[in-house]
Length: 173
Image 1 (cartoon, helix red, strand yellow):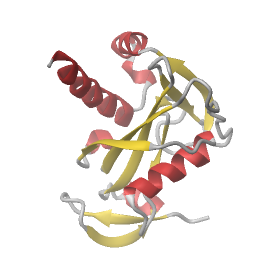
Image 2 (image 1 turned 90 degrees about the vertical axis):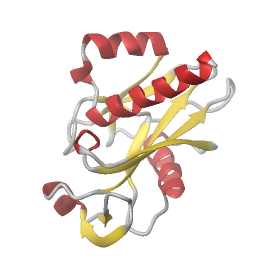
Image 3 (image 1 turned 135 degrees about the horizontal axis):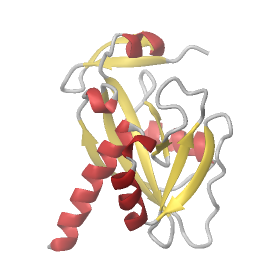
């Protein structure tokens, strides 16, 4: 199935619709969502991307992520990706939005956070999208990112770094 994405400008305003492959080949700005899913112990769920992915295969990434399809809203895309990739339906809180840049794959990236209850369902990763999944504490993840950042996708590193700076500045207040 051919996926169509909205090409947008630096201000995230619609320009036209293009086929996904063309958008990536030409490095056109487009939209994406990422979800950081936390369990009741405040550990983040990480997914390891399938080897069949055309971008960042085999790397650790956000709990769930994906493109905003043509005509779709950011919140709808986030709910869809969480459901498709992890089989979960949870409330998602919009946290931050980063502008399109090289490190983000030319994607305007909207980050959402979801929190699992202690008794809630666990993620059920789609094996076509995800080859492994795990929960990691923030200190553990910070250490791993410091030791070997190349094991993580560039968009995840950028979003996680921004997220951590924001949460640390809030905690310092």
